[in-house]
Amino acid sequence: MTEVAVGVVDAYVIDPDPAGWRVLLLQRGAATRCPGSWETVHGHIEAGERPEDAALREVREETGLVAERLYTITVQPFYLPRMGAVQMAVVFAVFVTGTPVVTVGPEHDASAWLPIDDALARYTWPRSRTALGEIVSLLGGGDAGPAEDVLRVR
Image (cartoon, rainbow, N blue to C red; front, side, top):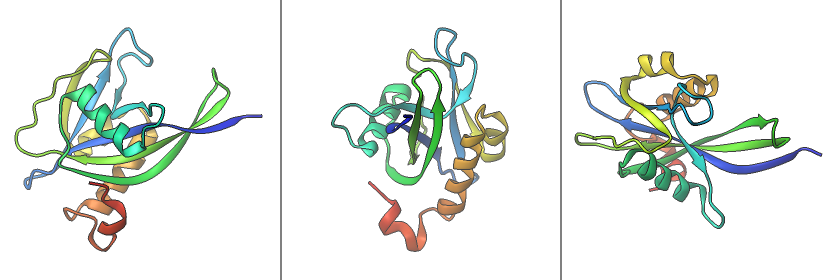
């Protein structure tokens, strides 16, 4: 029987510059899975940890950034053949402002702040393009509008 588990988070880090949003992408390092791929912040939920806390922790660990606002967006499934399991990634939008300076963690070789269209073109995974599209659709006006009370986590 194939297991289904909610075990990871994807955190899309956004600088909501009024001149145009910039999205942070990270390039996986040579000694990691999917070397050279461009992704969002991604990581495991630790035992006893809520997904939103995992998202904030992963953003801090992988980028050195601290979230000003956090929104829940969707859940995306993917299959891990080595484990024979369907993993569910809880997707968040993380807003940072000011002059966000990224300090990449050991899993990554590079980072890039990109406009939305450039980020969509650079992502390795199609599900990243889908999630970013949902983020822009839901939050493109600066907040979640009438859904703010259910989507904003912090």
